[in-house]
Image 1 (cartoon, protein in one colour):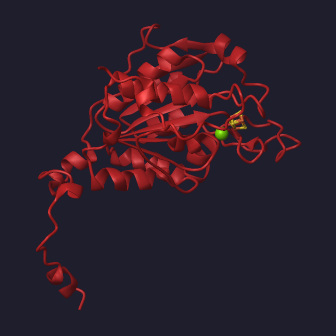
Image 2 (cartoon, rainbow, N blue to C red):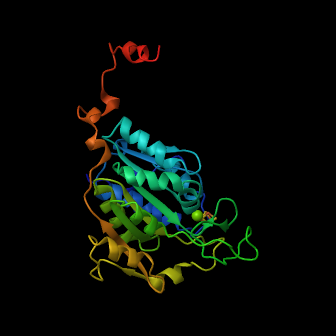
Image 3 (cartoon, rainbow, N blue to C red):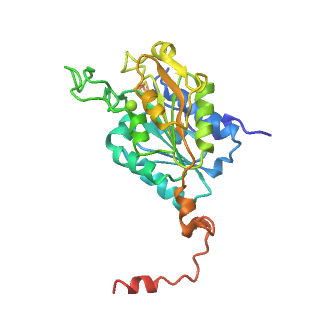
Length: 286
Ligand code: SF4
Ligand code: MG
């Protein structure tokens, strides 16, 4: 029998997000994409950082780890290299990924290991009561910036394009069929797939509501966008009157773990480590 989203649900707990939070859409889209791919839950490793959305692995029946703030990507890269037969999915928020995690964000994409990174972008740190995140526009007032943010906003798509990420996309948490398909395409992509997800925080952000995104979003692929054109993808990344969703840029590059001779004989986790003598290696440091 084909799998359904329920097959990826941990029956022992329920999400504690505010009613209407965009995280529900991301959770449903992730489970929907896994079901469409008919993935065995035991073949999925789901990694997150810290934040409202980053609690998500608790409510999945896959393997999972909630790691440190901003550190999900290095953890996930390590998990992928230890067992590259696993489908590794990373998820978190914009504060987590584009703030403290920005260094890892850039270098993980340069490496192009076969990971999928889904970032709920709601322009705030929701878990710590609504301070602005790095994607908030300059001048945005918040509990931490009562006179408006003094900093320019980060454009995560442009950053990803600048380091030649091999799959750069944006979804919207209120368009479930589109987001589900986008995440599936990202998971099927060979290499690092990055999906920024426009996600209302219904409690702390009264600007980026469902109605706001409903009016602004349009489908890039339906508009005939050429996702092989990186310059065009840059232009699309900076559109603000209307907000494109879909695949901005995609190409097939060298996948990190496929290029390493150490992995040619199969996943490291499946190797027999009996009778391996590492004395020679230690001898070099004597
Ligand atoms: Fe979602 Fe915002 Fe509530 Fe956090 S604070 S659960 S991001 S609505
Ligand atoms: Mg956030």
